[in-house]
Structure formats: C-alpha cells, structure tokens
Image 1: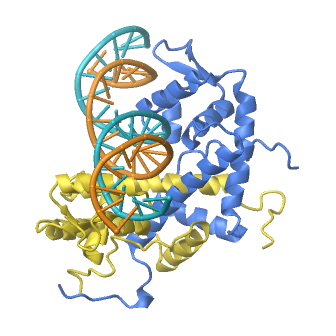
Image 2: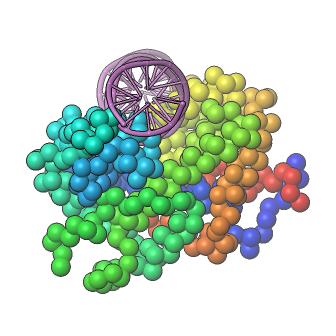
Length: 167
Length: 167
DNA sequence: TATTGTTATACTCTATAACTATA
DNA sequence: TATAGTTATAGAGTATAACAATA
C-alpha cells in the first residue's frame, strides 16, 4: 500500500524499457507495412516472409529445419511461411536427395526480381525509420539489444550482401 | 542532420537495426510468457491485456475510446481485450452516465489482487531480462527508441506508481 | 527410436467494413 | 451527420499435439 516512488536518479524501470521495445517493434511493423505498400510491394510480402526468401536466396537450397533454426522459430512456422510463399509462386519445395525425409527450399525464377525490389523498398523504409539515429546510436542500440537476447541467428534478409545501386 | 552513411563498414545497416529490434521484441514476449507462467500467472493475462488492466486501475473508470487512444490502438482492439478480460471476471463495462453511447471500464473486486500479483511477476521477469543492462544503457536505450517512434502514449502497466513490497 | 515435415487446431494481436444506438 | 462501441470477418505470427514417412 505504501506508495514509494523511486527518485528520478534510479533510472527507467525494466518494465518501461520492455514496454518501449515492444511499442517500437509495433511501430516498426506498422511503418514497414505502410512503406512497403506505398512502394508497390504486395502486402503478403511481410517482414518474416521476406526473411525466409532472403535466407533461401543467400544459402541456396536449404532445409526447412535448418531455416527454422537459423530464424529461431519452429519448423511448423517455417512450413506455414513456405506454404504462403509457395502459393505466391516465389519458392518451391524440392526433395533432399541425401535424406528423403527432408525438404529443400529454392527460389523460383520470378522470386529474385521481386525480392530485390522488396529489398530496395525495405532499405528505403528502414533507412527512413532509422534516420533520426546517428551511426553511433545505431551501434549502441545493437550492442544493447544484443545483451538482452541470444542473437546467434544470422540477420537474414539484410542488405549487406546485396549491394545494388550504391557503390 | 548529416545522417548519411559513410562508406565502408562504418556501421550497422538500418535493416540490421530493425531486425534486432523485432527479434528482441519477440524474445521478450517469449520470456515474458515463460516467466509469467512459471510464476503462476494465467496465460490469458498477456502483456497487452495487463496494460489494459493497468490503465483501468490507474485512471479509474475510463472510456474505451480514451483507452484506445492512450494505448495507440483501435477501439475494436480494445473491445476485444475487454471481452477477454470481462470473460475472466477482471473488469466490467459500465454505462457512462454523461453519454449513453459511451462505456466505462472498471476493475472487478478480484482484479486488483491478481493485477498486483501479475505486476510483481512482470517486475521480476522484466528485471531479469534487463539485468544485463546497466542503468545508463537502459536510459540510452529509452532515449534511442524514443527517436524512432512517436511515444505520446503513457506507459501503462508500469510499476512506477505501484511499489508494493520494496521499501 | 529419433528426426523431418505436415495436418489439425488454437490463440493473440491487430485491423477494416458494416452496423446499432446515441448525440 | 458524427461519435461510441459492436458484430462479422480477416490475416499474420506463433505455437502444441498428433501423425506420416523416413532414417
């Protein structure tokens, strides 16, 4: 019952920080969707699905299970992403010749062009969102966030390996 | 703002930063659920729903519409949160005497105890998650995140105003 | 028996559109 | 007409459990 407010010096509460992260993530998803849509990216091409495409693009034929581990999600979730992307004709399932239980993922012919377009849009949208942050802030942010979670996963669908226009 | 990226490996890409935020949020949600569950909080008492309860607790009878604005979500989303919480007997809808279109939200008698328990659990879980961060890092993080999003909303379900055990 | 992937099911969060009741 | 809230519907993300095929 005794309401004891900590003095300002104590810093933000953990709840506050957590809340800010969650809200930022929500905000980002929102902006990403709006921005992508404005740039002509179909709405089914969401962030997680793009990361799936990006991973397949980067690693070539990859097992669904491996992809799940790389993305830090369950196999069933990958199944569902793949279902959606296969329905849109962006990737296909192939039997793994070395293990008939396994399934390899491969991009279709139409995928790379759309993926590149989406990457470019993503670049624009995310750059715009991160514009208020100096490079130092971005590094700090990454550093701080890396302490919260276990980031063994690669950052899929990044644009580091896919420089297109810029030198 | 000369926020143009110097060439080379000067810093993380915007995509990287965005990705890290999203993954951190996901990680947090995960940990929050696991931790809450371990501490005996029913699984229907999710973060957003707790924020609803927290807001009603803090602001007393509040209109659903006002709550939606405070939380930065749509009225329909509030409706659905309230449906769930009312079903669990944690809050009730009351007619607003000043406007018969409007609905006020109020906690039930059983809510405060559970809310307090959930708050305590939240405190523990979030503190544990944020443990690797120094106070300075937390402040930095909040500062940086605040530049990304528009944080006009109050931070509901925070524990700043509800110190219970600690003295 | 263990692993890979799927089907079936469920639940949360969020939303738009159309609607009712009231202002 | 405009506002407060609801119903109906949808879709995205995520998950568990039970299962099939294969190892």
